Image (tube, rainbow, N blue to C red; front, top):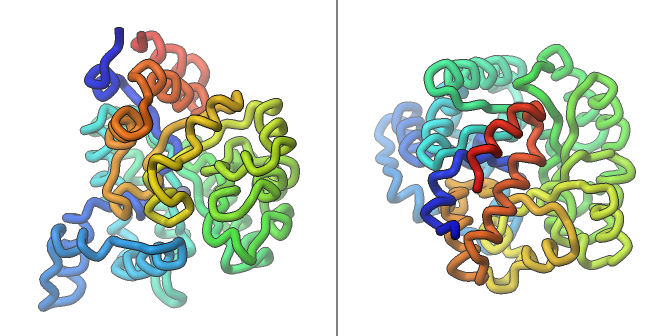
Length: 330
Ligand SMILES: [Zn+2]
């Protein structure tokens, strides 16, 4: 019988992880101290500031963090630092969001950030063998027209590493419908498409992500359970959900970890994957999410194993690569 310790050792995939949200706190402290002479940031005092009561506070802290970057070249170093944390968890393949347009106007350039992220991914692969794939996150809050223009700017960078476009930011006030044209452009350009939906808002967002955005996976998607018809839509189309339990508690979407609907999603026949979302902001990791499912939600190691297999099968790795990694699974 498999044990929790075996799960940590398995070669794993993680599918919902934000590059900026995975910033190691020692990396962030170095960035702050280098760019603001006299600052005395430490990983410990930064950690104390990463507390949120709701999604809005989380977004403000996010903007504060990305505001600490002063140079595009910091992004290749960030990719290498994040890759180090993944390798320590035996994560061999990760699909990450990055938000190249989230930096103050007149500051860092999206194209240069993208180049540096791709360079970092190449270096990480050469040095460690880890496979990293990126989605550029189109943030809802800047509106539909900006989103369409941003997708067009990213098309020249499409590659096996910059494989897709994601939709993040505030669902409230920025419904999926406005982003249908941008996503159509992305798909026509050969990008894979995924979207955060049904995280803070209801099942209708999941429906429109599937039928209008044509999302191949849904970020969170937990609110699909509000509507049996939408649950059935996700189930019948076999759209995987990128579930991030701790994230939902830390942003106030779910009151307590014991109330998290992950078991209900599995029981509804959905393809559930397990992820950490913004591990530095939420003081977690994929391995810690495994521990939480076992300790707080009564999962057996075998139950978690099924989710970790889903992480691999729902990834955008080539089928033969998925199969070869899965041969190492019990
Ligand atoms: Zn996310």
